[in-house]
Length: 129
Image (tube, rainbow, N blue to C red; front, side, top):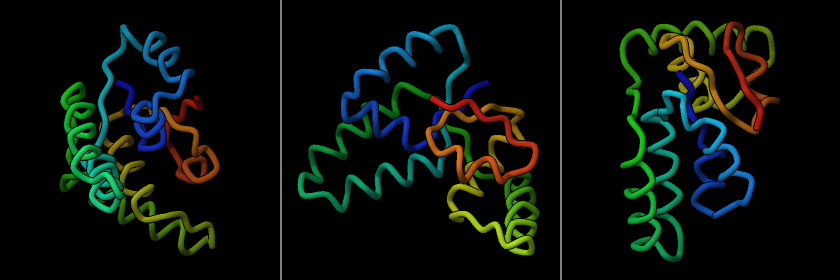
């Protein structure tokens, strides 16, 4: 299973040319995203100047993917990941930790451009695009 990170879905919304190549490449894969990514997309849409239009675009985009929720297993994994990163001084954003935890507990690979942060999460499968 492959999970699309927020930055990839934002690129799709913005019509970036290379995202069509990515979607073609992933066409035979089980592609999903997370409830945290959905939150991030809606947050951006609601605070934008064209909120109504952007919310509809996010609705349409997310209707194309199943969304994996942040559950109890993800919560436990995220707590462990976040504490280890904090202790080691390698903090990353909390939402990246939550997304990474969802990926780990679902044995999924995250498709992202944000390798700098995600590479700090031990055991996370990352595919840079």
